[in-house]
Amino acid sequence: MWDLIVIGGGAAGLWGAGTAAARGQRVLVLEKNRKPGVKILMSGGTRCNITHDCDIEGILRAFGKQGRFLKPALHALPPMAVVAEINRLGVATKVEDSGKVFPVSDRAIDVRDALVNRLQQAGATLHSGVAVTDVRQDEQSQWLVQTDAEPLLARQVLLCCGGLSYAGCGTTGDGYAWARRAGHTLVETYPALTPLLSPAAWVHELTGITLPDVEARVVTSDKKLKDPRLTSRGGFLWTHFGCSGPVPMNVSRFVASASEPHKVKLQLDLVPDMSEAELLAQFDPSRGGRRSVAATLQPLVPRNMAACLLKRAHVMEGAPLAELPRPSRLQLLEDLKRMSVPLSGTRGYPKAEVTAGGVSTREVNPQTMESRLAKGLYLAGEILDIDGPIGGFNFQAAFSTGHLAGLHVDGK
Image 1 (cartoon, rainbow, N blue to C red):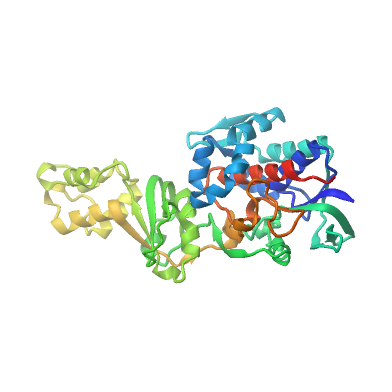
Image 2 (image 1 turned 135 degrees about the vertical axis):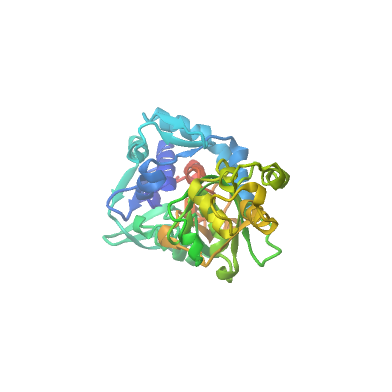
């Protein structure tokens, strides 16, 4: 009989198991992949963006309304505590200009190995390559965990088996059925942090062009949607299928959840630090002299992007600013501040870094991560209806919720 069986050896499960074992619990972690922490190993381009360099309030803001549920978990394990523990485990960290925290080695495997060592040193047992096929509570309120090898008993269970994103990592939504059987409601799931698709030929012609600082806003027909996460600012990449990079991926949850994705548009501000009045002054023909329109665009956007803007405004590349027609000038200004990109959907779960939706947080005690409906059932990480932007926020949520659960399990 185990005090706690943790199902899922990802970020939440590894951290939660180590915390519970350090408190004297007999803990078993079951991971169906041959090795634990597969998503950790893949994250951040195999560098692992551990967390974000900000305070608790910064994490809460990143999650929008979902942040309220995370508040107790973040107070139990804030970002600085995650970094301190990773450092204590022998992995030096660094903060990049974006605020992302990475291991100095740029090796995700160092982070994964540190978390595994942490739980093993605390006395927890990790079994990889073991798939769980069923989880249910018996008549004595004990938890029966059926694996592909044998049945196991535990006083408590911690579900950390992820959502539906990156199925290659083993996150195939297994835990949803077990949570539902325990009485839980599932908030409809959608792929999040996934690239966007566009049917426009002119978009595909821009493939490979990177824009370092763009502000994007999802425009939908749903006028009641007032979520600040509809807007994102940062890096943007044009691709052969549409667009990718932090900004499109951050707003992808709203495209994926739209009832008619083909009616959703992405509105881009290519020069978010410039006002419209400043741009009007830049493109004032009376101040142009011999300067060309292309030269005026040069400091604002990459050369290939400027060529696209000139084409859309019907301006020859060498045309002087002094001869810029008013319709062309207005088209340039419109594209620079409100470029409209038609969309047709997202690249879905196979390319999604996280899953939006999941087990309703209303049915989970935020002070303990224990189910309000089934005693002895704890839930943490991506299986819950919480999803944040790119930047280490989702790993922070996984570490914190797993840690909080580990603090409150009690096998006595």
